[in-house]
Amino acid sequence: MKITKTICALASLLITTQFAQAQTWPTKTLTWIVPFAAGGPTDAMARDIADKVSRHLGQTVIIENTAGAGGTLGAGKAAKANPDGYTFLVGHMGYMGAAPALYKKLSYDPVKDFEAVFRFPDTPLVLLVPKTSPYKTADALIAAAKASPKKINFGNAGVGSTSHLIAALFESKAGIDVTPISYKGAAPAMNDLVGGQVDAMFDQSNTALPQVTGGRLNAIALTSLTPMPVQYPNVPALAEKTLPGFEAATWYGLYAPKGVAKDVVQKLHQAYLKALTDKDWTKRMAAQGINLLPEAQYAPEAFAKHTAAEVDRWRQVATDAKIQID
Ligand code: MLT
Image (cartoon, rainbow, N blue to C red; front, side, top):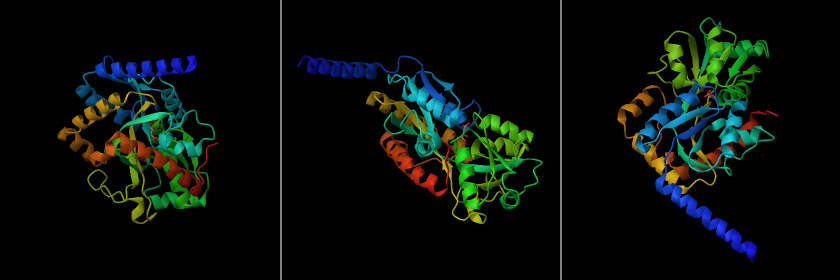
């Protein structure tokens, strides 16, 4: 009886505290954990969105880069954070979708340990090679990889990152065997790609664009179903001829540790929707090849459903493509 009373009192204290928090929130700086090195696609997307959202919240959002293990390190840290509405995770398809299928031991559950807040727009990827690479097309790279298994190496942003997963899917569909080289994010991997220490890499098409237009890298194929003539003129989609049906895009979004007040989620989602009414901003994203989504897909409920569906989908994809980590 006494124990029941204590539990009831604690539960009502929790609800009252959450209510009081939600009334005044946000009263201090928010932290968004980005689990990769600064300067990469997840970091760039997070900083851009954090900047716009913070203007509508009236509070600063800082980005904390906790890099390592393909994003699973930072995600594990976020899962254990206080759900007080001040610490969030910027999640993506790898560590919030594919990781449960890839890691035997994962310190968090993307569905049970997090509350989905809102989804970001998606980005397709591009297959890149150094400027001096002998591979001018994806077909030439595939032919060379078939002739010499394991000889060609592919840089990636960490084990289980999207650059790793999409390269593994590409390998499986093309019937080749390459050597992966993992970094703590796309930014350091791209440095080595530009320097020629890495033979090839899939990177997000938006952040790779300046490297390609600046003449430091060659883009040889896209993972979008159709070409992107404005951003990548003369670069074919893999699906067009090389690997019919091949399509991949990275999804991202904001998550809070489970237990965060519902009002906090709603306020953040509303601030994001307000930010998206800035047409100059959305036009700029579209010009970079970022796929803006129908508004309903950005919503917390839709994003939670999407996350759960992706966890299930990746179990199948990883089995079919024989992608394994440990
Ligand atoms: C990835 O490949 O998962 C991302 O590009 C990593 C990053 O943002 O650095």
